[in-house]
Amino acid sequence: MATDKAYKVLAIAQGISNNKAKGLIDRGLVYVEDKKIKIARAEIHIDTIFRIEYPDDIEILYQDENIIAINKPAQVDSYDIQDSIEGAELLHRLDRDTSGVLLLGKNKEFIQQAINEFKNRRVEKHYLAWVEGIIYEEVEIDEPIFTIKKGKAFSMIDKVRGKKAYTLVKPEEIQGKKSKVNIEITTGRTHQIRVHLASIGHPIIGDEQYGSRTQAKRVLLHSSKMKILDYEFNAREPKEIRQYK
Image 1 (tube, one colour):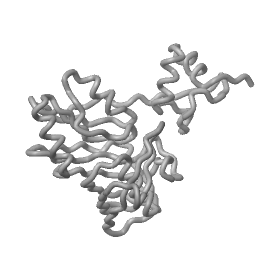
Image 2 (cartoon, rainbow, N blue to C red; image 1 turned 30 degrees about the horizontal axis):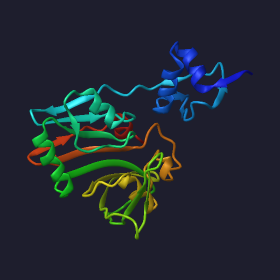
Image 3 (cartoon, one colour; image 1 turned 60 degrees about the vertical axis):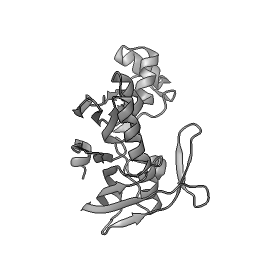
């Protein structure tokens, strides 16, 4: 049976340009049945039937003259959201696959004030995740993290080169050999939660980069609540986390 590169087959099937098709695959939005297409140039049968899962519309949780809080969909880059909101600047970032509370500042004075809060670890950051294995009790992880940022960022525990990182994990629910956990972090290292959970043998479900063997449509990590200065923002769980079993 004839084959061609995945992005070309997708472009013909959807009636879109090759560049747009490649972009959809690179963003992790293209599936064949329940399997994500990861390599745009992979050879694939020309009669393949695709499914494209576009992210949800971006929901504004709150805004005033200083700040705008977004409920970021998974599979959307934080910088793409910044670019779509004129005059707003990211106060922090979430990984592409992480959903939930994302904050942007709207004036220079407030942005500087907020950045100082992050630097001085006065921002409360709460997350929800489904992880592999059973977590029965609270776990504190304070292993230092070192990040290599050439190409795709990758972080690791490194007691010599690593920067201080603290993660508190609390169990919420157990389903079979999987656990739903609440997470609080006081630092914000690259991939901190993902690396810390993997380091104790409980990688986040869907996080193949850090050792998850359970397939999912995304990394099941969600920023559920943030407190900064006099503000508090909460983002409801997306269905793939709320209904995961």
